[in-house]
Length: 151
Image (cartoon, rainbow, N blue to C red; front, side, top):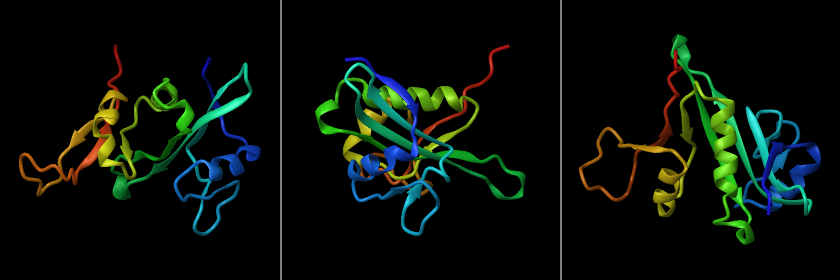
């Protein structure tokens, strides 16, 4: 199995919508849906030899007010169950990291049961401001800080 990551196309939106947990993916902005139009990056992982889509990722750029730096929001990451633990999530996240190395990436919402997986994918946990030591509810954020340029 080979994994190739490419940009999502309008023809992918139905498959993306059918392979998520309650999200609808559209081409253009639409109330109650996420769209390719609003995506910073919408990526598809596929096996080019088999012509099979295995997973997808959607991110958006959030601009901060008042000249503060913005960040990239990783909005959705889905890997079809039959392709899990085969490097598909890693390929998608690595491609996003490569495309925005100088941007902070924050998970929009994250499954606390996958805490260890997010670490393996390159994210760090930033505790919430009122979080107590040893708190297992993880109210903070999963973040990939910007990569410092090497001179």
